[in-house]
Length: 132
Image (cartoon, rainbow, N blue to C red; front, side):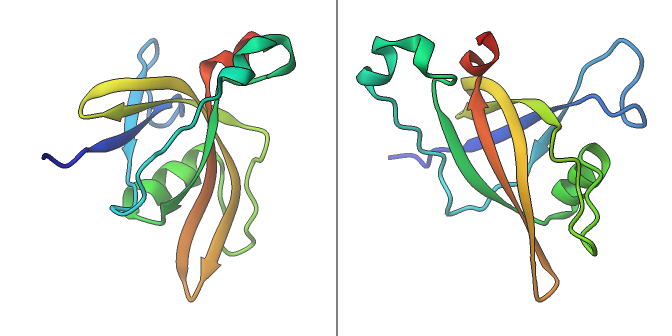
């Protein structure tokens, strides 16, 4: 049985990183032992007007060089003061074995720093949330 590879791809519309008229993507680093598991319920689909998302999942992302560069640029994260733009969201895709599992957006919830180890707490929301 082969190992499942999960990838988180975010859209970067950062003026300093994006050429005019092009969409650029960044692949964020995930922890090896944190698979993305998403549960859906049939009951959630019965009255779609009362749900604002198809599903969401919380993740902790490591403070790797790639992740730090993205969060510092897009969310204006300052790890010293723990300040960041909390109202921003970015388009993202979860790819499993190079196949798109879902499309949606990512929101940064908080930045954790413990013994100079940075970790980003994010929530991924599916695209259905944007319909309402």
